Image (tube, rainbow, N blue to C red; front, side):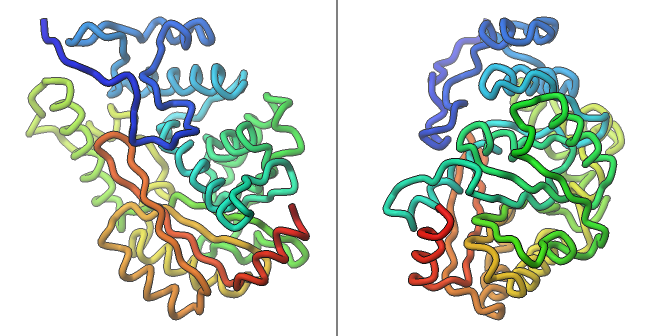
Length: 329
């Protein structure tokens, strides 16, 4: 039997993240009994699930959302992205810190804080975490009508989200803010987890690498002869095309986002986006200089071995930021 020393706390996560501790499967099964069918002792005799089993991961997410966020009903259609909730929560908590930094260290709570989630997807995890933790109002946008239909079903099935989350279809697949930001509204934040692959082939190769890494972490030899389609079918790293790749990858997508943000810069306090690849950052900074951003921040995050970050920018100077806070919070 293998033995190892496992820390009780995931120290890389944000201090307010509810998922810093190791998963307590007894509590999660109590909250969502369906999870019990997937819990097994791993090679280290710890309770766990098979993270290569898409149904197991989805059921774990249902348990986490029910236990920590009071979401009684949550589901996603097959092949839609099933997100890791601890990492998603970190982004939200870091956004709260971003707002607090310009508000004398005080996090603004409540529905007066408005957040736009670009590409909210079928899972609605960012709005759920942000609303339950801080009471913020969310507008989720997406180019996929099926994704929004599922997200609307989540809202309808959970009365606590009623009036706190609204969804908008982006009719122009090449646009980000135009056609979904209305002329008379303002947002304190925008957030986005952009597609970072440049093609379907690159997305499938990335999925295959994740499969190999997951197999190695479970002490199994990676299947060198595995076809890409097998990885896509077996892994929990699902996702529709628009969730995983776009022409030009994340660099092109974020570049479009930055260019469009300048046109609605007066209506938003902070624009933000995840940046998956550190190599993308120089191009992002060049785009922000060209767009005339007043202030740019890069916030580093870490979930275990994975390093991530988001870039935030504003077109408001310090006086305008103070006036915004007084008026809206």
